[in-house]
Amino acid sequence: MAGRDLLPYRNSRQNVSGDAAKETLGALIPEGADTVTFQENDAIYQSVLKTVNGKSTMNIVHTFNQIKHLAGDREFRISGGAIKRVQGNFQLRFDVTG
Image 1: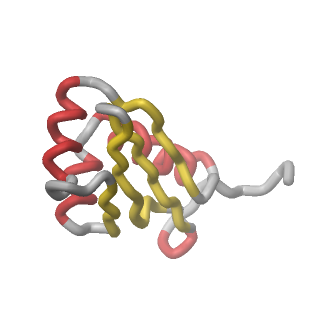
Image 2 (image 1 turned 30 degrees about the vertical axis):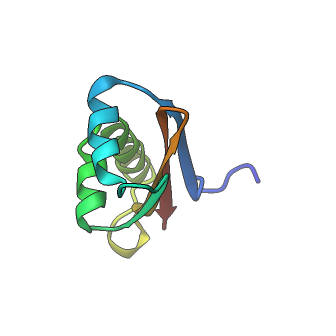
């Protein structure tokens, strides 16, 4: 709906393939698994948000909050997400709550 002051509730990054990202994300997925989820402020969340993709997604959320003059309990935030290994690369899902 046009004119809504909302962000998409899910932001996905496909084919994350940079060497540094692959090293970081690969280390976060348990041996034998292809997917791991994370929640706001847990150790995996903190590591994902330090990646280029995590920083850029956080920047989108912060910029939206600033442009819309949202503060406190009205602010949007990344509340969790998932890392999925797909054919040697990764997909990231960021869940946005507001």
